[in-house]
Structure formats: C-alpha cells, structure tokens
Length: 599
Image (tube, rainbow, N blue to C red):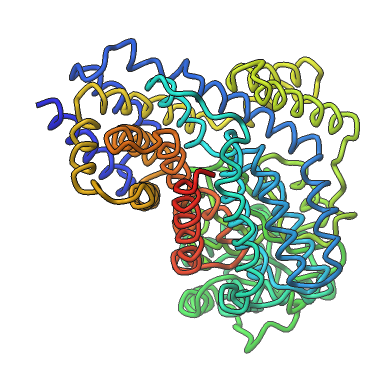
C-alpha cells in the first residue's frame, strides 16, 4: 500500500512539474506536507530538508557566487580569457567553454552564465562573430563544468545526503572530477570540430553602433511595424496630448518618436502635446496605423524618411537587455513595472522564447529569458549596467559600460572562496558549514551587503529542494527502492556493472529533462544505491552516475541556463533539443564507462 501511495505522489509531482501547473516551490511544499500527512515519513523527516547539509551548502554558495559576481572578479577573469583568442573562432569557442566549465565548478550554473554572458557578447563584437556561434558553447561549458566538483551542481550536493543516510562515505569535493573530466575535454573538442554543424550562422555582429542597430532592427523585424505619419491641418490630434489622443488605447498604435521641423523632440511621454506638421514615428501593424490615420486625419507616408533608419541620433542608443536571474519584475507586466518612467527607456520589442513580440507590449508578462530591445539616451542604457535586475547584452564597448572590478573585494572574495574549498577538501568542515562560514565572512568583511546577499540567493530553489529531499527517505521507508532494486537486479543479473551505470545515467537524464534536475536526483539516487547493492556493484559509483545524469540537461529548453541564453543567442527551443542531444549522449557514455572502469 505504501508503495502505491508513494508512486501516486511521484506521478502527480511529475505531472505538475511537466505542465507548469504550479510554481516549483509550491510543488515542493506540497510534496513535503503530503509525505508527512500520509505517514511515509515522520514530520521531523519531512521538515529536515530545511536544515540539511545540501540546503545549507546551496545557501552559502549562492552568497559566495554573488560575491564573485559583485566584486567583478569572475567578469574580469572572463574578459581576460576571451581576449586570448585573438579573433580565432575555434580558439574563442574553446576558451569560452573552458572558462565557463572552470567557473561553474565553483559557482552555481546560472551565476556563471550571467557573469560570462556580457564578456562573451563583447568578444563576439570585437571579433565580428555572431552570438549564435558563442552563446551555445557558453551554455554547454557551464552545464558540464558544474559536474566537475561536488559543489558545482545541485544533484551532486544532494547526493551526499543520500550517501550519508545509507551509511556510505560522502564524496570529497574533487572526487568525481576524474569521472567527468574526459567528457569535458571531449565536449570542447566536439564543439570545435563540429562547429559548422552545431552552431548556426545567423546575423553577425557589426563594427559600429549604427550597423549593430540596423542588425537589431532586422533581427526583431521592427522594419515591418514602424511607420511614419504627418499631423495634417485639421487633424483631431493637433493641440492635444498623447494621453488624450488615444492612439494607443483606441488603435493599439504607439508613438515612439516625434520630429518637429528639423528638431527631434525628447522621447514622447503621455503629456507630450502634438502640433500640426509634426512627423510621428509609430509602432503598429498596417491595419492599426491605417485605422488611426483615417480616424485622426493623419497622412501615412510611403516610408520612414524623417527619422534615421536605425532610430539613432546624437546621444541615443539601442540595446538588448535580458532580465537577470532573480529580477524583481519577473511575473509582472511591462505596465506594472512602469518601465519607461522608471528607467527612461522605450521598449521597442521583446524576444519571447525566440519570437519577436511587437504588439500589446504593455500587457506582456515578463519572464526569465525574455530579451528586451530598448531605445533611449546612452547614459540611461549605461545605468542599466549597474542595475542588478538587468544584464545589458549589446553595449558599445567594455570601456563605455564601465569596469566594475573592485580589486580589494575581488582579492578578499578569491581568498575566502579558496579557504572554504580547502576546508572541505581537507575534511576540516562539512560542505554546508564551509559554505555558510565563507558567506558569513564575506558579509563581515563588507564584500556584500545583506541586501545584496538576499538578492543573490534563489529562495525558490532552496524551498523546492527542501520540499523534495524527503522523497528519498519516503522511497526507502515505503519499500519502493527495495522493490525496484530487486526488479532491476533480476533484469541486469549476470551483466557487467556498465549496463547498470548506463541505465541509471539514461533514466536520470530523462527524468531531469522532463521535470527538473532536483526531481531526477531525489528519485534516481536512492534507487541507484539500492540496485547497486543488490547487484554487488559499487553503490557510491552508482550514486554519482545518477547525480551526474540528473545534471545532464543540455537538451532541455526549459532548464534555467538554456532559457537565460535563448534570447541573447537568438536560438529556438528546438535548437537546444537537437544540438544538446549530442552532449547528453556524450556525458551518459563517459560517466557509465568511467564508473565501470573505477575512475
């Protein structure tokens, strides 16, 4: 009966995760409560996830990663390394992947991607290499690099919890590295050798701001929705403000520029009053513009002629901006953020899941992974560089954006990070204690403020992990892991351990792609330990194969790193499914073979 109850909980949880019916943290809390209420675990065990070593480790590592980012240390390192390529595309791809893998080994994956993305975009501009040729290698390097160390990915941190519960030795911080390093080297080599097959050749970057802006207009297909009209004598718009004229509310047309004689007016606001003879630059589809022209006595000109074709004039720029991983405006509409009044920039279009969106932008609910095409004064765009809620992707140069490296803070952060890693490596402290201790030391030394530390922590991830961790104990208590272990041992009996490891790696990767890496870890690691024990294989090897399999999410278009990079790289979801499959298979084979060889 308990096995049936547990199986139902697992099935319902996976359905909820697959359909996005509820937020992940709500699902985690629901799992926690259900396990306790059904008696599959005690209430003490149900709430133990919040004080587990895994959650404490993630808590501390989020803050340490935030310090590496805020101090400028990680970004400075990324900039220096990509400069080593000296314009060679193959060398740049290899350096981007290697740098991402190295940083991701000590930072959470999404933090690594966020830190290195501006450097990679800048390197692409300098070398005239399209972002689509560099951003996917960044993602692959980030994901596979997280598998190198115990602290690089959530599943491997969770793994130690299950090993301790099974009275097995915990993994050391670099113990799993020999298992995955061959895969890292092969991944870099394959990406370079097969770059023309794996990496799309899309619109290249240009040397100047004007050319880049032209490219952005083409990329976002703005040329299809930009129109110029003239306010004719007798027009109902003459002498009234944009708020009163109703172009947006009645016709769905947006005024994004006004030229009066030879003078460009400042970016129009709701209080801007129109005059006869004004040339208006409108954003809207053909039908909406024609409807507005007829209703308001406007002359629709055959083409945009009074405005620069790239919308730029002295002091104004266009830029691509993506939301930072924990931006406060996620889940809010553009109107709710009061974007224009808050930042002084106009959103011309939004790249949402690979598709440009031009209409009803005010009603668009912003999501992680959205890329905004903004237009406005250069100083306003530069100000976004200092805002933790945004990452500016397309900026004029690193010098103009400002280098935020703080040498004293960077040195302190590097030393504290090294001390925390050494404490774990030499068995002085458990991972959770070392991570929290390092985070506390960084706060005491003033590298981060408490507000910055709170912002660096992904609370929904911590809540989700805390709620899901008791699933492992429930699997054992209900007898599910024992039953599945026996079934698999009968199926695999007489075969080499390689086939067990291969099956575990495939199952964990499949569950990770369908749900999340955390779900895959808490489901497959206990099963791997139990099955290996039945077959006489190494339970620790089976556990680490399951953890690495759960982290193997290269083909998942919904994994947060891939979502984050989709807009900047101009990718479609199917790009990750098709191109990432090669690296998923690579990791499955290398980990299964490595475990069988005892690496």
